[in-house]
Length: 48
Image 1: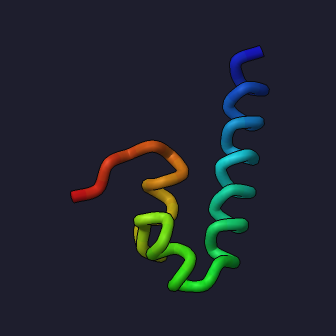
Image 2: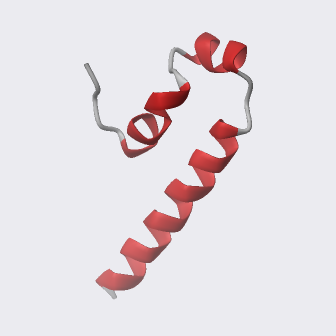
């Protein structure tokens, strides 16, 4: 069952990355992230 949870989480993260990537830079800046940091923002990792 654990593999299915990992697949689901991966799919959800990819969808979130796609949706954020579709936003323009101004909106991303309003959200406090840059385009380069989208994967980190989605995964919850902190980039310095």
